[in-house]
Length: 77
Image (cartoon, rainbow, N blue to C red; front, side, top):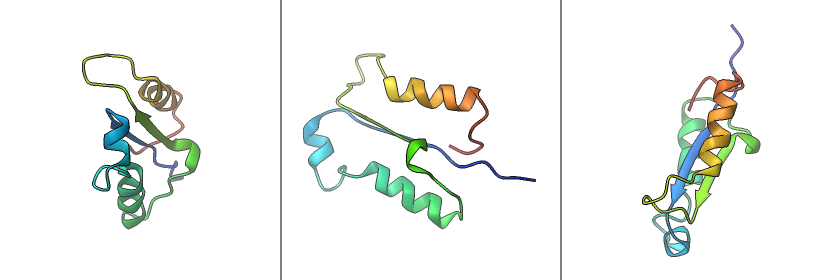
């Protein structure tokens, strides 16, 4: 069986959160976890949403992530 690459999605609501040390790198935390699991997470499969608050349903990176999933280009999220 051939494994497909993993994909990740992370969101920070504001520039302040994106710059804060504890939330600055949700993508880095996800990449570390994927590596621990022995999976591959190519840069184009890392979807990071910055500046979109929970009050809005606008999530361009999440929409792209859904498209990747629908196309069968990833088997892990």
